[in-house]
Image (cartoon, rainbow, N blue to C red; front, side):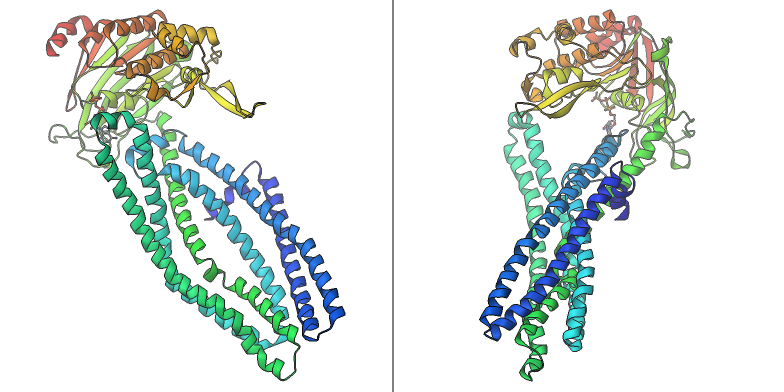
Length: 625
Ligand SMILES: Nc1ncnc2c1ncn2[C@@H]1O[C@H](COP(=O)(O)OP(=O)(O)OP(=O)(O)O)[C@@H](O)[C@H]1O
C-alpha cells in the first residue's frame, strides 16, 4: 500500500503543493468535526426548550440552529470538493507514472506476449482512479474518526460513563463480527474487476477485428465467447451480491439498534429526573458519532474489501513493471551473454547453462559516425522463449554482417524463425546466446513490422509516427483540442531530423504510390479517419513505407512489408529505398523479392541456415516456391 501511495507525496515534483492541498482538506475536516460538536450542543438546548415549552428560548435556538447550518454547510461542501480535486490530481500523476513505466523499454510487449498480468489497461485506467479516490477518502475518514472520537467521548463520558462502556463493547463486537461475515468480499471484488475487464476487452476485440469476423461469419462464436465472459462476470457478481446481502443484514441491525441503545441505557436517569430531555438527544447524537468512528470497519467493509482488491491488483502490476523495467534496461548492456551449452540434446532443442542464457544486444553509434558495418550478428543462437529448457531451437550459431547500402533477404518456411530474428535484433527476445551489434532505434535503425500499425489521428500523424509525436496543447478557441507537432528526441545523439513540412509529406506519399489517397482526402493532411478500417492492407503497407522514407534511417528491417502489394508497387518501393541510400533487411516469402537484394539468408528450421549471394540463390529459390 505505502509503495503505491507514498511516491506522489514523497517523490513527485508537485509533492509540496500536494501536501499543502492535503493540509487544506485536513483543516476543513477538523472544521467539520468542530461544527458537529456545535450542532450537538445546539440540539440539546433546542430539545430542552421544546420539552420545557419555552417559546422564546425555542425561537432563539431555532435562529441559532439555522445560522449554524448556513455557516457550517460551506465547510462540508468545500471539504468534499477539495478532497475530490486532490484525488483527481493524484490520479493523474499516478496514471501518467504507470503509463510511462508500462511503455518504457518493452514492458507492454513482454506483458502482452507473456500474459502474466490480466488487463493492464483496466489497472491503469479504473484501478488507479479507484485507488486514489478510496485511499484519500478512507484516510480522511480515519482521521476525522479519531478527532470525532476524542471530541464526542468527552461529551458521552460526562453524561453517563456506563453509556461509554456500552458503546465500546458494542462497536468492538460489531467490528469483529462484520469482519467474519464479510471477509469473502475481498477475493470476490478482486475477481469482479478482472472479469468485467475481460468482458470489455472481448467487446473491444470485436470492434477492432470487425471485418475479419464478418468475413469468417464468426458472429455466433463471438457472441458465445462474449456470453461466456459475461457469464463469468455475472456469476461472480451474484456471489458478490450474496456476500454483500449477508453483510447488509448484520450492518442494518447494527445501525438500527443504535437508535434505541443510548436511549435505553440513559432512560432510567431521565425517569429519575437526573437529566433533562435534551440530554437524551445529545447522547444519541454523540453515540452515533462515536459509533460511526469506531465502527469504520463495519460501515466501510465493502469499500475496504474493494480497496484491498485494488491494492492487490496495482501492487502486483507495479512489481511486475519494476521487474520488467529492470530486464528491459539490461537489453542495451554490452555484457557478454552466458554461454549456451548445446550438448548432445535431441535435434531442435537446446539446454540452457544454469537455466539462464541471453542474447546481448549492443547499441553502436555507427549510424552517427557513418561507419561501414551497420549490423553484426555474431554466433547467434535463438530459442523460442517460454521458460522451459526444451523450447524449439530456431537459429543456431548464425554469423551475419550487413554493410552500408547492402541488402539481405531472409527467407524460409513459415515458423522457421524469420520474424523472431528481427525480434532478437529489436531486443524483444533474448532467449538464446550470441551478440548483436546495431544502431539504436531512433538513431539510425528502423523496423517495419509484419502488421502495419495505424495510429489514432490524422493522416499527418500517420506519416510522422513514430519519429515525431503530436502533443495536445489544450483546448483551442473553437473548443477543440489544438495539436502541436514536436520532435521527440528519438534520434539520440544524432542531429534531430527537421520536422517535415507539407511538401515533404506529400512527396513521401507520392513516392509510396499513395497519390490516390491524397486525392481521396482532398489533399487535407489533417483529415481524421479510422485508417486501419478505411485503408486496404496494401495501402497501409505503402503508408508504412512513406513513414520510413520520411524517417530516413541508415538501416531498416522489414517484415513481409510488401506482402499485400502487386509486383510493380513492390519494385517502386524498393527503388525508393535504394534512391535514398537506405540499407535494408527484408523478411519475405515471395521469390520476386530476391531481385531487390544482394544476399539471401535462408532459415531451414531447427536451427539450420544458409547464406548466399542472391545471384547464386535465385534459381534454387525460384524453383523452391
Ligand atoms: N510469443 C510467442 N511465444 C511463444 N512462441 C512464439 C511466440 N511468437 C512466435 N512463437 C513461435 O516461434 C516460432 C517462430 O515464429 P516466427 O514468427 O519467427 O516465424 P516466421 O518464420 O516469421 O513465420 P511466418 O513466415 O509464418 O511469419 C513459431 O513456431 C511461433 O509459433
